[in-house]
Length: 326
Image 1: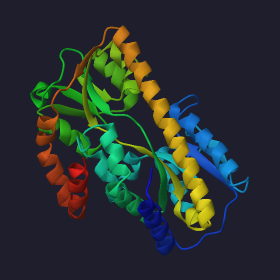
Image 2 (image 1 turned 90 degrees about the vertical axis):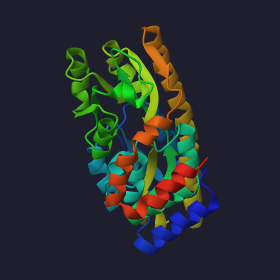
Image 3 (image 1 turned 30 degrees about the vertical axis):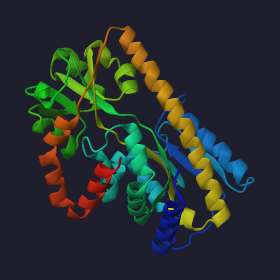
Image 4 (image 1 turned 45 degrees about the vertical axis):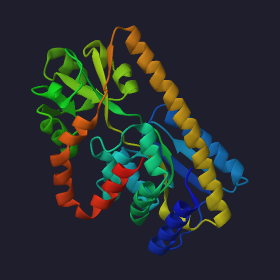
């Protein structure tokens, strides 16, 4: 859970930077995920808890499945106050908030528990402060799993196993750099095109989390899944900073408590969903490979990090803080 210093920091930044806004009793919230998804269930629980803990003074109507626009659009709507609440991945927030972009650096986290230790400590407070300056206050952190490599002909244990491999990645310089520094050929493409690209050999492999690998059927055409966990990008419940600043201290506490309770639920549901997806693909014959040592992968990312620091020199201390967090 967030500690007192985190709450004080977020509150101070929100009030100092953004001033006081009109209090909103009937809030609207955005979520890209469909019904039945862990985040959707948890956001509905957040809305119910919010109403209960505020004695009905605040209600939240959730709009799921991205019905109010794309994620980048929704981020801007929350920043502008057109929406009060959003459940966002930090990936699309990174271009707006440089401090939040550090979570998109390959292999910056050792594993998912390490990510949460960072977010609930000094590193998370720094990221939250950067977000508050841009109009977004994170109330709680959600789990979005870890992305790992999958392909059709061999397990990946070291960077050398990627040499010559064509790997689909999201369209981001950090991710293309990751593959290129391992000697592979990065192939950015739309997610909807990946199944056919794997099936026809346009790409040799791709990367994603367990539920995405299973639900899309990618396991049918790429039967090796290697647990590199190279990208671990969290999601958050974010509130418009003006809206948050206008709340009384009691209301801030109630809103934060409701959000953090929903985060506990979401993390548990996500773990169940990951386990079910892994079980399904293993039963279908997928070979799961536990990567014994991630250090060689992390070492190979040196040029990717240095290129990042050239554009973001002020963020080197934050990256080093994250890497030093046990």
